[in-house]
Amino acid sequence: MGTLYVVATPIGNLEDITLRALRILFTVSYIACEDTRRTGMLLAECKKRYKCTGSPTLISYYDQVEQSKTPEILELLNDFDVALVSDAGTPLISDPGYVLVREARKRNISVIAIPGPNAAITALSVSGLAVSSFMFFGYPPEKQSTRLTHFKQVYQCINTLVHKPTVIYYCAPHNLNVVLTDMKEVFGDIQVTIARELTKIHEEVWSGTIDDAKEKFVEPKGEFVLLF
Ligand code: SAM
Image (cartoon, rainbow, N blue to C red):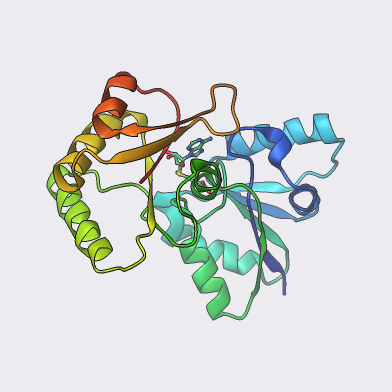
């Protein structure tokens, strides 16, 4: 029986790939990846920079095919080791992989984490916000009415807690302004921290009120983590 390795990859800076991730990615027979082109480029760059050798077969495994492709990968795991990666960061965290890990564990297939970068934890670690407890919700809902309901529920939930946790969201650039507007409606003009393009050239960790954030990020570009 093979092993399923859940392998974290860089969220920007390629130097953040771990030695263990390199070893696993170049010794497994198959890599299930969100985007074969993107993972192909990552492997090619690792071969060049770190002199890795090995040519695993890449299998496309993205959100829309998670259910349908899982049996094929479970079948491969009968005889081979398989690595699971996403485009960036830790698989499963707002990324595909949950169905595969759940089903593998149900079948007593060994599932091993190869830990590494994650945007939420990276942002939290440099935010200056309380870290003893935090709540991570991935992306806020796309639909505005659902998003407002979600924020209201979070607000109520936090109010019941004696020790207030830090709240973390992922946010796509095209949504940043509407998300901030809805947050203000529910939470008021609170202080937020916005971590942008972490580990990349234009990395920035900014703190201010929601109104200030809307002024600063008028045309948001890049990848964002939103914390308060
Ligand atoms: N699995 C990934 C992880 O472990 O962080 C997250 C994948 S999710 C599809 C992508 C979102 O993560 C982006 O929209 C952004 O909110 C956040 N993100 C990813 N890379 C980032 C970076 N370098 N800087 C800031 N946020 C980032």
